[in-house]
Image 1 (cartoon, rainbow, N blue to C red):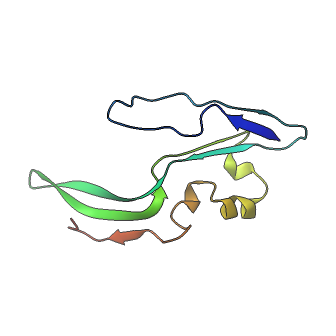
Image 2: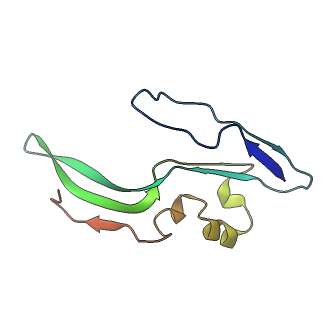
Length: 113
C-alpha cells in the first residue's frame, strides 16, 4: 500500500477553527485498511458532577496519563471484526488500548477535587 497526506502538521492557535486533512493512496492487495490519527499526548482529568442539596459538586474524577489529545480511527470494517487483535493491541489501535500503553488510568473516589 502506498499512501500520503495532504498536510503532515496542523498548527492550532487562538484563531484555529478546523481544517481538512486528506489521506490518499492506492493498494494492490485485498485486505482491510485502518487509519489512525493521533494528536500529541497529554494528561487529562475528567470529573463527574452530581447534584447534592441544590448544588452541583465534583464527586469522582479519573486521571488519564499520556493519552492523545485527539484520537480518531477509520477502518474498512468495524474494528471488532478485524482478524489480528494482537497487531491492533501492539500498535495501540482502538479505544481499549489508550490507557494501557504506558501508565494505567487512575480513578479517585467520591468528593475528589
